[in-house]
Image (cartoon, rainbow, N blue to C red; front, side, top):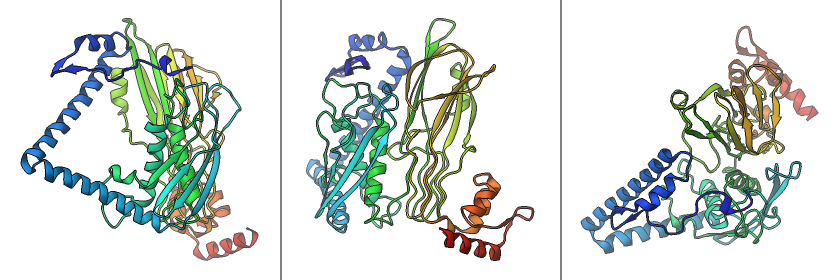
Amino acid sequence: MPDVFAEGMLFAGTKLYRKGKRNETIWNYIRRNSRAARQLCDDIEAQIASARLGAKRFKELLDRYGKDLVFNACNQLIDYSEAMLRQRIAAIPDGEYRAEGWLDDDGRNRGKTLPVKVCVRVIGDRIEVDLTGSAPQTPTAYNVPFEGSTKVAAFAAFRKLLLDTATSDNRVPSNQGSFRPISVIAPKGSIFNPEAPASAEARFTQCNYMIDLIMKAMAPVLPDEIIAGSSASISFASYAGVRPDGNYWVFLEVNEGAYGGRPNSDGPDAIDNLMANTRNNPLEDLAMHLPMICERYELRDDVAPGAGRYRGGIGVVKAQRILTDGIITHESERHTNVPRGIFGGKPGALGKCEIYNVNGGEPRAMHSKFHGLDGRRMMSWPYYSPCGGGFGSPLERDPQKVLDDVLDGFCSAGDALNVYGVVLDLDAETVDLAGTRTRRAQLEKTA
């Protein structure tokens, strides 16, 4: 898509309802310009219903407590979140913290990676995230809107790092107050701040990778909050075709990735990250409503996650077969840029995707991004998400956890011995503790 006008319908302040009554002219226009009109309109109506419920509940608060008390309480919560984040930032030494990496390509210019550079400036109780030096905007839809996505990714990164609900002693509401101490710089015309009318539909993987680099940059001063490299991507697939009755079918799917190892636990397996929260589609429901079959859906067994005191999460493999001729479009990342290990942990594993006909033929390797692939009937498309990197030295991992991973098929007996330094008796399903101490001492000497 060369520009935003090719991405779909554009509406600017158009009223779907006027004085409580549906604007049927607009609704009919939307229906007649969508391949999945019923699905689209139902989705919009659900959003309208949630907005109305929110307005109703807020009005009930105003009626019960009065305007002054309600708005004062809202402002106090926002100020509280800001104060708590500033307090955490102030504890970080002032300075510039940098990290850089790359994205696979823009979906058109193959073999041409896109640099991403992050500089985090800690200045007292505020932070600047500077993306200067990152790739210029692309001629494809692989750009990131500055206000709606780039800035949000920076806010999300420091909310996760400094005010995580699971690790914070005090509950801090997630609101606008946690945005105020963070500013973002991205030069106009760059991938993170494209000039109009650049298209920007495929924007999510860049945001996740930016967050991954922020964590890498902050590792020296936040070692207890940082995790190893995650898949830091999102696999977004679009399947479409025509049913025998002439009607279109469309399915949009998000496939999971994996987190990197963490300061106190392994990286979670097969889960969205770092800025995503999509739910899983039940496979049975998919097969009931669409001409598709899921042939395989499980944790990857072709590679190992990043080894470490806490290993990286294991990515997912998911293979979808389409039962009619159709079109497949996909975007993801990290087919060339492996998730990093940290503090002695080993790197994770690259992602990949393939395509093949179930009636025979060798699988064909696909790029991480492709558009409008002519998908023939009985074509299967497996996606393998990246595995996370390891946290800490593998020689410090609990030997019992290594045994558990070998028995579960997540680690080979060879890696247990040569990477983790753990000697196993697989017949008895036990660890040779004395042999493990000796083996680890040998590996430490040769490291």
